[in-house]
Image (tube, rainbow, N blue to C red; front, side):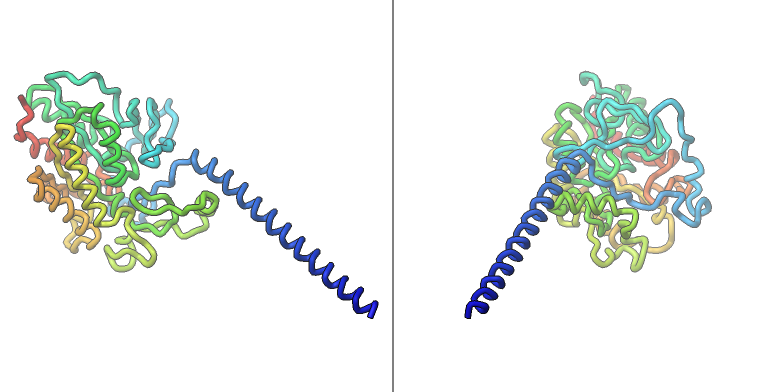
Length: 368
């Protein structure tokens, strides 16, 4: 009896000790994970979200330079300036161009003013001055194109000559921006810029199909900062984000992928861009960005067609001036030399777009 009681006590003691050890280990692990998550949140807050590139860089295409000869016209890297734009975190827009900066982006000198917009500082608006503001992603920002050669600047220069008054170009494009971020940009700086014309040209970054767990404007983000940082650190070994129309069925989002901004939200955001522009006293104009795919005889991928159709419907719904870049490029006998890659116009492409934009808005009553 004594031995049985002792063994029972020993068993209970062993079990109790094991439970205490398990509870202690679980507590330490939980505390460690909490500390790691807190640390990850601190680090994550300092890092701009990764930007999903719309399409591969020219050097990534096996057909180069034959399929896109415009890539050969990319300017050479200038000297004497720091290279690349390290985007800065932005509370509303996730990231923004670093204010009051001058550096090199895609081999061109890039100035960023105090409003985090590409270009020189804006002076107080004069009574005899008109301002044309463009909104969109890197195709609007001017990937590989000098400041005065971006289509907004080309259009402004032509309107200056036509109207006999100064028309200032305000480049509101930022690499990677969706329509949601473009709207937030307009809301943030619109009253300071005081645009007379707002060119809505958001497209590629909205329909970009991604399966990467990255922050997306208008989309979801994983609640754990530790998970987000781990995913970024492992990015070189994980499947890269892809564009739906480059693989499988053209235009069909791949398994597990979705657009950064869904079609319904895209439609709602476009409406908000129009209403916000009008609240600022500006005339909204719709511009559909072209692509080399427009020059082919094959039908366009359905994803591109669907988002472009929303832009056409927007112009029709509100009676807006519409500049259809795809039609313009076909009419002007554009070639692949007018593009650096599959979405970014080259200098000659921007020239064509700028001339078409100026011609379209020339008669909307802003000369007075």
